[in-house]
Length: 302
Image (cartoon, rainbow, N blue to C red; front, side, top):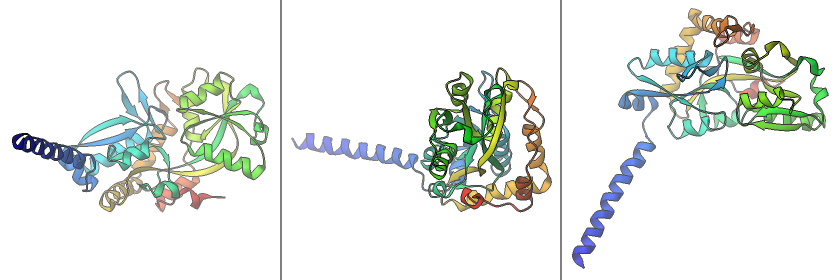
């Protein structure tokens, strides 16, 4: 009996040691730079279908885009010896994966707002988008007022959903909002005629239209529902990593390299169809390159 008790206690102690060790690995207490140094790799959260910001190219699972390239340039600057590892994420799971340490940096098109700042930290703003709508050219829809009572598609987890609901309350109108799991599914809802418009950031709308079966069949119309600062994101309460990322971005801004990267993805022809989005840099973003900041969405409120 005593032998059995000793054996049970020993087993319990061993299990506690094993699981305690595993738990410690899952929730590192050190900073992101220490974690990267110890593992020899940095995990980037990327999107599969958010051109030109972040998207997958071809069957080889190569990820490209404006924010992907910015992430790569920054990480090669601050962690030159680390291997870059890419993980496909969605709008809704990016923040939880950053919070639990699965991702070291989020490289998708994520809006910086005060609610999200309670969960993660954001780098300096690297894009200012306008949330607008895409419609079919032959639909006759050119204004938000025409959407009252109609089907409108939006992607789960995006701020476009919040802005639509905000406008419903402010204008006392009602939309039948149809949620797609990602931007391609949301676009398909409009493309197939199930939705009359698709609401999203203008840059993402332009990228999806440019890579659609018939780009000339769609257009971006209507007033902006709001302007949104887009930024890279990472763990909260890690000032050393934020400082390193921000300083690297400042160098890209000051040298003119960031503007070149912007032109590559928003003005020049981009893969896979080698079409141009024709979205020159906005005055708001030009000003941010001169005076960088990480202000949230609420600072952009009209």
